[in-house]
Structures are given as structure tokens and as C-alpha cells.
Figure 1 (cartoon, rainbow, N blue to C red):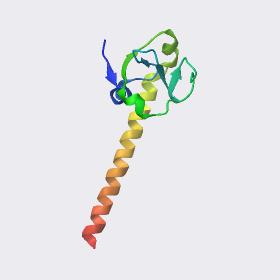
Figure 2 (figure 1 turned 45 degrees about the vertical axis):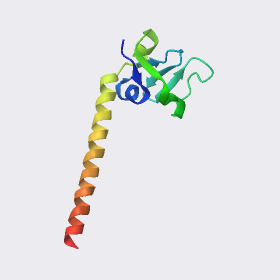
Figure 3 (figure 1 turned 90 degrees about the vertical axis):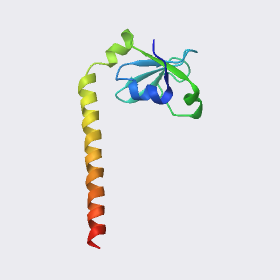
Figure 4 (figure 1 turned 90 degrees about the horizontal axis):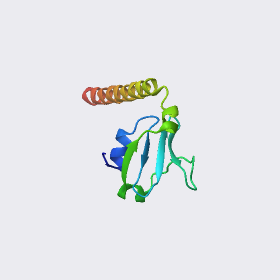
Length: 104
């Protein structure tokens, strides 16, 4: 069983997977974002707050989360494409700025 800090968990959790702390707080990654599961915040989007950074998390899947994971590969491919497009746009902007500086 692998344990993750909050930041590591965010990097590793996949669509349809859940993550839980040792004290039982659980989140589910959906296409809408990271949602609390159970408790008084059930179904609410997770707001990143300082106390989350001191927790350790375990990532897992269960029957409920498997339903959410349908289309995971397509969704993750779109995420990668969006990131690549943002990177290329930023790179292009940087090249344009450097070119403008050289021309001055």
C-alpha cells in the first residue's frame, strides 16, 4: 500500500479513483473535480486548505468509483493535449518576446 502527501496524491490520482486519509476522510476524482465522499461535505468540491497538506493519503478504487472511471483514457488524453497546447502557446509567447527584444 502506498501513501502520498496531498500534493503527491493530486499528481497520482486518476479519474474515478478515491483517496482516503487514515482517519477516514475520503475524496473522489471526477471529471468535475475532486469531491468529498461521505461526511457533512459529501459531494462538495474539495477546497485546498492548509490542513490538507499535513495529511497522508492512500489511493484506491471501489465499485462506486469504478462507475466514475468510465471514459478515463479519453479524459486523460484530452488533459494531456490541453497541457501540451498550453505549453506550446507559452513557449511561442516567450519566443515572440525574445524576438521583440532583439529587434529593439
